[in-house]
Length: 122
Length: 145
Image (cartoon, chains in turn orange, brown):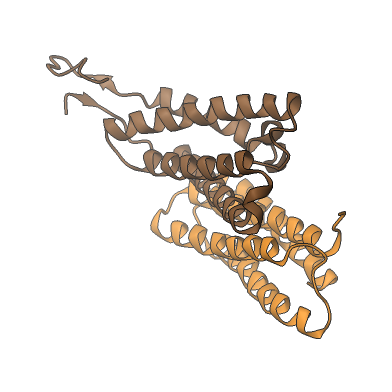
């Protein structure tokens, strides 16, 4: 993990999540902005996967359990595509809320990954 | 079909299903890690994690699937979750030795933002609103166990 990139992910995932939940509750159907924002969350996760593969090779290893870290990362990377597919199939405002819930969940999971990588307390 | 069971996958129910799906995914992920990592450390807690994960998956499916049978499955699994989060929540406070490791239900689901505590309540309200309604002259009514 690279610290600033992780913060960037959080700075994207949480506002995107809030935006989608609010737009969804306001009655908006999934649109380019909400779908695109969720896609951005996914792209950042894919970059994070690349970083997590490369970082230990150049001496930046997680302080916590690598297995636990990877379970979180892989699970998180599955979520946005599912929400996007859902948004394509079900064109209702609730799909927009679902996009938001997905982005928020990714945010929480990235934060957990951050803890596992950087701040292990025995 | 002698009763009509309103579909449970419309409107706000879809968000409920999405959140259930997420929790199923999260619980499964944690469970897989715990089973792979160090099962011997806390077999009770880890077995429970695995059981909780399976129940969340079944509940998610039951909410999506139409029909009365799946409705009953949804009631059972969501009821089980509610009992689970209360019992394990209490046990994890009063008997931490039994639960040295985290499960999705420990401390009433604190590690998951209390979602495991709130979700079954929301789920049961939703199921109640969407309960099967008897249709006039339903001959097989009452055969449900």
